Length: 328
Ligand code: NAX
Image (cartoon, rainbow, N blue to C red; front, side, top):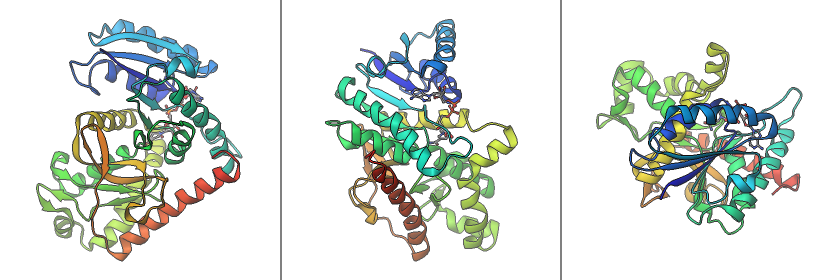
């Protein structure tokens, strides 16, 4: 049986970068057939339909079916994997509350449609920003779907962090492991190298031989470099991250389905590391038997604790804003 994958915002940039890699088997493997459901708003339908024509022209062996729709009930019918990419961007003069409210108006109904129509094993990955709080809203609206099925993408942040360390250490990125992203997918996130290794050797010790005073480098170069990489891409490229975001989405789902002993993802907190219950917060996670588990018992110093607390405070604030608007 094929896996049914719903991609919202499929007519947008990330959607275009995702579809062909999914059809080629990069996400679920070279033996798993896929059925794609492309959800768009009416203004985006033509672009999604064009992508569907190109998918036909790819003659992908694994691609069983493509459907384009603007109806969430059709898009999520029988869905096993939902990639929620389409979101409302911040427009001119829009306050943060307006942005959260506009997205609650998208992700709430999509959560309800997932609960009503998706397959019982559905897994949801929210890419559209603000990703963590959008995932929270989706989970809240999807009555009956277990909370552990909802995630927000922070894998792009982790990939960026590993790449920056590889550059600083002049080491292959494949040797850099156990980097963690904590908190919100925003400028407050905490990319944490305290448990990271390069070829099995502590990254912090390797950095000391390269960058001088490691805490200064982390504070002034590494953390802002990772957290603001999206803005750097916009400045250099003239457009936001697309292929790297699609790549991270594929990494995230592949590891969720096939397993990994360490990555980072926004998942629903049960109070781990003092993060308030119910928030969708990025943690270091492993995937075992198709389920994410938060990696517990990691030790932090006071500086790291304060960094995580600041990002978690932002998530609490976003949740309060959405609640005060009556949308949660
Ligand atoms: P685009 O503007 O190119 O595409 C978004 C698409 O979503 C549009 O085609 C639009 O018509 C559609 N859409 C809007 N509302 C919809 C709805 N209710 N149902 C279905 N489709 C809807 O943006 P793109 O560059 O593809 O980025 C998509 C989202 O990813 C943005 O919110 C962006 O901020 C976010 N990102 C998240 C990242 C992450 O790591 N979590 C990194 C990359 C990216 O910034």
